[in-house]
Image (tube, rainbow, N blue to C red; front, side, top):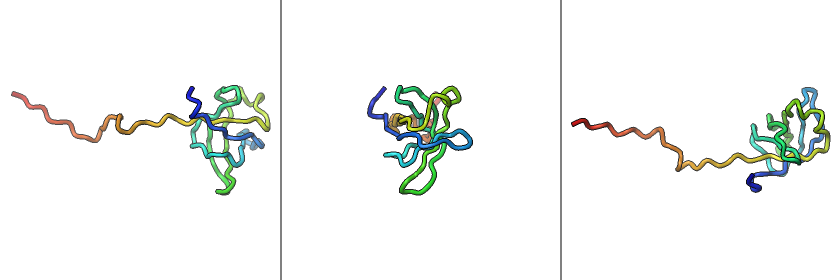
Length: 103
């Protein structure tokens, strides 16, 4: 795995009534839907919401059911940035195809 894509999210401060983990004021905001990893690099959940004040945002994480008992408060979490898609290599579907010439 590319180490440059792994970013520290922060530690869990508390859980909501719905069972989502909350991280306060991460060093860099993740994107909604980003994968969340534990210190052992296990995929334990996904970022589902970012809310609160702009200066100190909260990140809500949906933890997978099999990890709910093992992940406790003050557990440090990490996110993995998705690979950037090179726009120039993507097929341009908006370009018209040249008409075939029949002879």
